[in-house]
Structures are given as structure tokens and as C-alpha cells.
Image 1 (cartoon, rainbow, N blue to C red):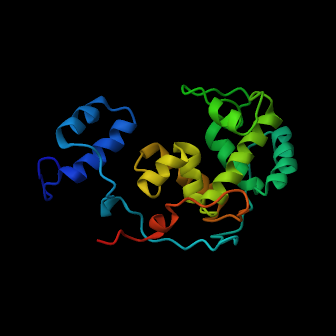
Image 2 (image 1 turned 180 degrees about the horizontal axis):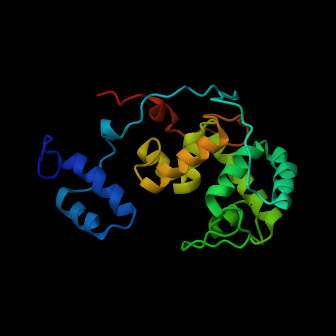
Length: 224
């Protein structure tokens, strides 16, 4: 539509944004179209910006509803999560929601991208958080919780950004200044946030400095 001006004003810059998003998800035709319209722009189309949501106060929890939920996790995994999650200051509800979305509580789950175990840790993430055996449930959970703790600090407790980053990577969230326009990631974020029942989570600001993109992410629209 934007490439040819069909129903909208023609804009190769806007077209490049959408072709780049499709190329990142493996669509070869989008890669070819980028050669025609040029490289992606940092400008995010207004139509891809979510409506302004509640601001997340630093270190405070803004709940949309209570964090009580039922879970289909096996008793042994539930026991591990309840014991380990407080050590990382991650609420068990969030850990279980991520785990369910990632592996459906399958200890030996492996993705086509070689994400492994309950929290689906890729080898680089496992190494980053000192997980030697990703098939050991306790080690895997600790690695996933360590990553969640870091993401919570990096995105200042904003659960939509944390869930998106766990699924697509923190760099992708920063590049798109919010949840990236991937159907898989947006469905993932909805599933996790709905399961947890909150938009925000307490975080330990001493873990890492916040993302330098947070101010831009929180702007309802980019100033022009």
C-alpha cells in the first residue's frame, strides 16, 4: 500500500519499516523489496504505536488486577518456582506465565532455534546467566529468573516490554521502541500479561541501568 500509494499517501520510508519487520521474520520477498525502497527508518508509523498506557512508577507495582491465578504446572515445578523466584525478586506468577508460554512446562522442550528447557534458554542466554546444564529444571529456572530480573530492571518493570524482550530480544524492543510488530510476539505479550494480570512488576534498580530508549518508548507519539 505504501510502496504504491494504494489508499494511502505513497511513502517508501513507511513501506521500508514494514518490509524490514517482515524481513526480520524470515520473509524473503520483503528482503527483496527493501532493496527497492531502501533501508529501514527509525521512524515508527503512528498506526503501529499502541495507545498510551499507564506509566510505570520506578520500583512500584501498578496492578490491573490481583496476581492470583491457577496454573497447570506440575507440582514439582510449582514447588521449585515458589522456592526460587523470591531469591530473584520475581513474582512466581510471572515466572509461571513465561514458562507456560515458552515450554508449556516441558523440561526437555527444544525449539528450532535451540532454545532449551522450561524457560527456553538459548545457549547464549544460558551462558550469560551461568547455566551449565539447561536440562536441569532448577538451573534452567534460575537462568530464566536471572534474565527476567535483568529485563525488569532494564525496562523499569513494564511487563509488556519485558515479555516482548523475552520473546524477541531486548534489542528488538528498543529498535521498535515498544512491542515489535510481529504477530507471534504480540500474541505472546497478550498471553503473558493476561496470565499475570498486571502491567507492571517491582524491580531492583541496582541490577542494571534502564534502557536508554525508555523515554522514547514512553512517549505517546514521536515529536516532529
